[in-house]
Image 1 (tube, rainbow, N blue to C red):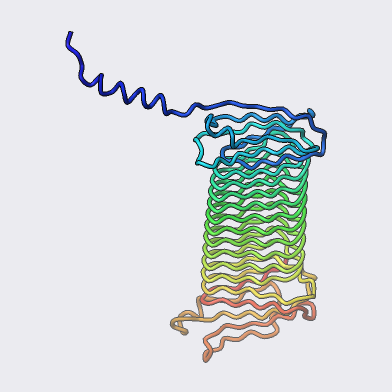
Image 2: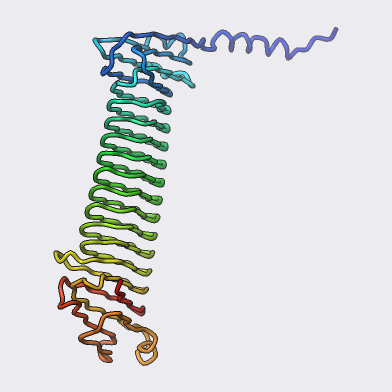
Length: 376
């Protein structure tokens, strides 16, 4: 029988690989606890938490090599359970911690390289941070603070204040009864109803928020901003998209460098500007502040109640040939003007309106665009 010389070369390599391959362990531990305790996790790997109505914390560690077991610590002090795994000489891959805990518990989780997930309903505060994964949390009746340097964040209904931060993903939050602060450097932000104030920012996506029971600040460098009704002031900005607000009681500041602005049901004042789109607004002036609508290249339209008191100063600047363009653009109003002129020297069409005896000033200015003033 002919012998295969490669067999003798391959056999030592196989034996060496088997000898030096790490042996992975599976270890678990159970702790008896009461409601209102806390869980602290500081590890490397994925962390999956699940809540129940029981009185135990169960920890299952998977994928840790035998040589790294000495770096695993699972301890209890009073009503606090602490899980630590910080290997000194690197770590094996695919490490996972499955942890069960009572639903009335505080949670503080930090992982240097994995996902964080929480299933079930949690009553208590939660802090979760990862340097390289996604975070997904179900309903939380308490404050929530989640951060990741490289993934998405998804959260359910939260009964307290919320802080969500990611440097490289999307953020989605079903709703919150408290204050909300969300920020991402590379994704979209989608949030349901907010029970208090909102601060949302992204450098590379859209922002969509439902109703906000407080002040709202939303800004993006690369998408649209759309919010529902704001029970307070609203500051909305984008460098590359449209802005929409369905209502606000207070001051609304909206600015975009490349889109349209649509503001409905505003009771207060408006400061809206765009460098390349239209502005349409429904305003009921509250008599406390002036308003301004400005675009460098589109139409302006404002709707006011018949009973509103305001002074409107509307201006259309004409660029290009004045004799031709002066007939193309116009100021159209359901209210009677007290003064309206075509200024040949300034190349402007101007009109002034004193509605119901006058009131807060509303400035409207556009370049090569029409202005509409409607009565609703």
